[in-house]
Image (tube, rainbow, N blue to C red):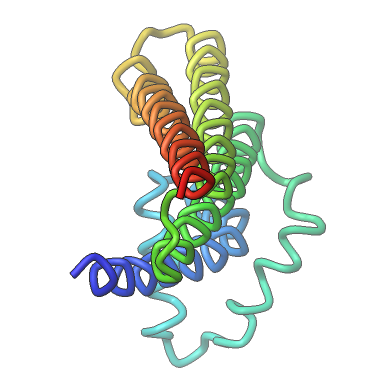
Length: 193
């Protein structure tokens, strides 16, 4: 039963990793498109132009545009949008690392060796990435408070990311310690027999 669940989770984590990498590529274009609207509005506008183009739209340009924006688009955006793009890219990279560590843990479960030091190391790496995302979100919240001269950023998703990813990091550290202890007990039992 555990093997079946691990296989399903492995596929879902792989899909999430592929989507994460795709979104990482598109972040600068989406942020640039969303300068006059919300970020979700920018995502909607970008994908609407790709999947439902007007007669005069050149669809291939929409696929190439993110690469061009990665090179020159930074100069045409204002500071809050640059901070947003950098935060999303930085958090997306950390999320990709977390997903890769999850795949490693699932691989050991699929091999039938879940209690290994390898899992403890993977969970420890995931914890570090969670703490990094939490710190990056805190920096963005503080930047937004100072930039907009308002406490409104405390009601944003970034403010929610701070405790959420800090707790996820702590949970990963606890799980890492448990896997390490289980691996040591297993090695001790193997030597006893």
